[in-house]
Length: 370
Image 1 (cartoon, rainbow, N blue to C red):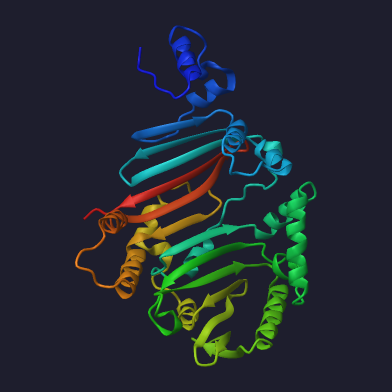
Image 2: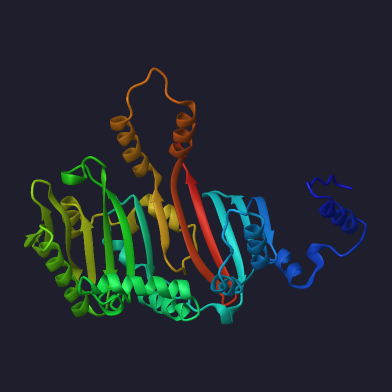
């Protein structure tokens, strides 16, 4: 018999009983199906199974006195997850992590919608981090519906609406109402203007079918900025109309405009405004590192998380050089952490749906080949 080790006697006794012929965990109904499902990992290193996810979370909370009890609404949402299994494998692309959740379809309020991915081409290949998705308005509407049975969530929504109303904004219409298309949040390296000290800037792009409402919201925000000593100036960059927010003595720190009829962008830092308005050649979806990561992930998905570690570490190392005083000997733990990070080329992740009852999260870590 294989060796068994546990702080508690009962699990060891159960393991002995199973070894002697008693029913095992893997032979019980739906659990047997869970164990038999293929995770499609080429060279699996480890696999983890949680047959009853709700009970697992409840037990984890109960065994940790420092964690507050889960509210009833949260417990109700957990009922949607029946079981979860996770695996780690190594293939020719890199290290692959996969989580498969078996859910109750009737409990899932947000419908899975494959992300078109068209918005990625609006970012330059120099982008070092990107998060894409769609359906922000749908998610907001689902949250409103959930709040009907969750007093804490309802209180939070009411506070958010009150705060928005105080600056003449309607959260439901002016903010989330027009966010019905794809969106992307990107981080792009830059050593110019106000971004020079940190080495990067941020950009958000929203695609919408309601440009008029989106533009009305921007006008309200421009007016609010002017009331707070920020200079708001319509200007032209790369032949296109944009609006820039400038702080006297510091320069332009935000700009917004339209990349096309349906794509609104908001950029942090003047260099980011120009970067987004220059037709990116090549664009991010033509980048070798982006292609290598995303080709290893399911094509039908709800959006990507992407991190180009090569570009990120250039920024990190530069920041460390500027802010860390010279020492005779670098900290060994820091050296180890940096060596690990420098060995990673890129990280990508996505969520997809095999069917209405099977949701999959997959992440790939590509490694340097040099």
